Amino acid sequence: MAHRVKCRACGEVFDTEKEPWIMPSVNHYYHKGCYDQWARKQGDLEAKLSDEEWFEALKYYLNHIVKAPIDWKKLTSQWTNYLKQKKTAKGIYFAMRYFYDITHGDKDKSQGGIGIVSLVYQDSCNYWTERFRRDSTIIERIEQQAREQMMQRVNVVGQTKKATIRKKKAVSLEDI
Image 1 (cartoon, rainbow, N blue to C red):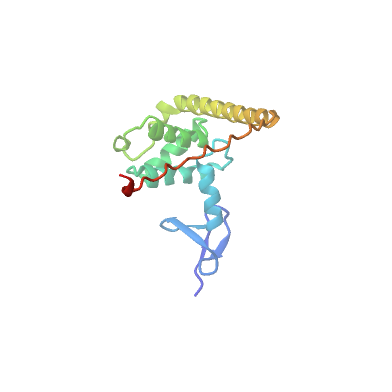
Image 2: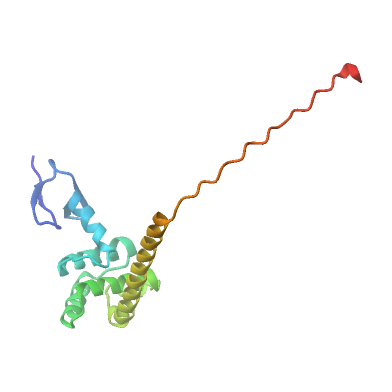
């Protein structure tokens, strides 16, 4: 019997008996490949996701990673209000990552929402911007070191012969 569901990432309808799939939350079906791709993008500062995908990523992060108590109606309302205040979906997501992962905020004080975003949004932007800049310079320096190493001549130094170990002549007990 076919069990047809819709992938939340790509929007295609598929049969769960014929294709590999994942259900990270109740009634949230994904193709295995779509979910893996979506999960990789969650922590990527350069990821290009829609507002809805960032909201899904935030809900997953709060529910499964942080395990914070969530008031879904309040969360949705706050999300919508922040978007109306010209905060980006990506910025809201990374503000929550900053609050819980970097500053180690207390999940029990969240009261089921994301009200802290208004207080940490600018600090979060500064932190992630600086981190991105620092990480990119690290990558550039590593690439430069690799180029320099390739340009250097390799000098082979001759190996010395192993010192031979001489065994002492055994003393016979008869000689004693």
